[in-house]
Image (cartoon, rainbow, N blue to C red; front, side):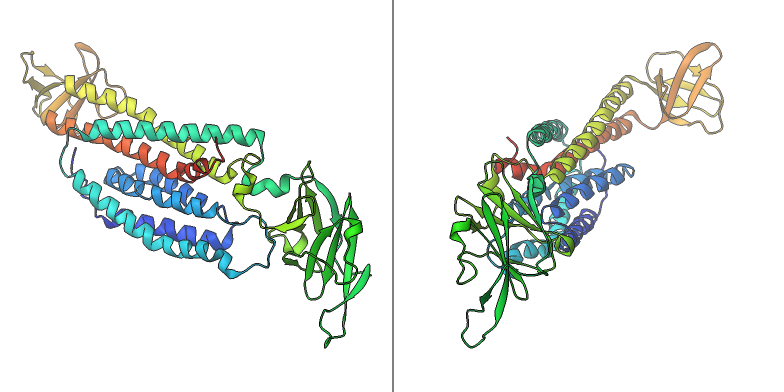
Length: 429
C-alpha cells in the first residue's frame, strides 16, 4: 500500500464545502432537506475523487468521519415542528440555525482530522487494515441497503414525513378573508373601540373561524360552541388575510390542518387535534406509525447504495488483477524485445515496440483489458507486459483494493446517515 502523500487539508476543504452547502440549503429549502443535500454532495464528491485515484483513499476515509455529524444534524431536524399552534418565534429555529452556521467549521475540522489520521494510518502497509476495511465496507453497505429497502417499503405503504400534510384529503378550500365578514367583534381593549371582522365557514361538522386584523387568527369549533362575544376561545398562529386556506383532515377526523395557500405557500400549516379541535404543535414523533421517513433522505440513501454497489463490483476485477500479478512471470526485457525470465523458463522475444517497456517487467498471459499487448509470431495468445518489480506492482494493486473499500465505506455511511437517524427514531422499521 503506497503512501498517499495527501495533505490533510484536502478532506478538510471538502468537509467545509459540504458544511457550506448545508448552511445555504438551511435558508433556501424546507427544514428536512439540508442534511440530504449534504449527503448527496458527499457522494458526488466521492465519485469525482474516484476519477483521481491519487490520495483518494485518505480523502474518502477522512470524510467518513463526517457521518456521525450528519446523524446528529438529522436527529436535530426530526425535533422541529411540522405544524404550529403558538405564534412562531425565532427561537424555534435557533438550534437549526446554530447547527447550520456550525456546519462549515465542523466539516472542515472533522474532515481535516479524519484525513490526517488516515494519512498516518496509510503511510505504511499494515496487514490487518485491508481485511478490516473490507469487513467495514461490507457491513456499511449491508446497513445502508437494509435502511434504503426498509424506507422504500415504508414509503410504499405511507406518506413521507415532509409530504404528510399534502397527502391528507382536502375537506374545503376557503377564499381569502377580504370580502364581507360573517360578523364583527370588539378589539378587546376598551380604549380602542374598533370592530374586527370575523369570517366563519362551516366545514363538515365544525366551523373554521378567522378573526382578521393585520393578520388572521384561526380557530375551529363546533357550531354550538362558537364564541359570539370575543371571537374565539382557542387560537393558533396567524395567517395572512389575502391567503386562501386549504382545510385538510385525517380520515378519522382527529387531526385538522389549516394550510395557507397562494403567496403564503411556504408557511407551516396550523394543526388542531382532539374532539375539541385544540390547537397543537405537531412534531414528527406525533406521527410515528402514520408516516414514513423523509423521501429526500431515502432517495439519497438509495443513490449511495447504488454508487457503493458499483464500486464493489469493480473490486472483483481488481482482485483478479492482483491474482494475475502474483502469478505473473518476472524477468528483464532488452531493447530487442527479448525477455529473460527469473524462473527457469526459456527466453521469449516479443514483438518490437518503441513504446514497450524495457528493464524489469512482469509478463501476464491472457490480458485483454489494459496496458500494451504484444503478439509473438510463433506464440499464439495475448500477453501483457508491465514495467516494474513484482513487489511494487503488488503493493499498488493491494492499494487499489483498499481504495475501493474506502470509497464503498464512505459512500454507504455518508448517504445512509440521515436515514439511520430516522430509523433510530422509529420512522423506518
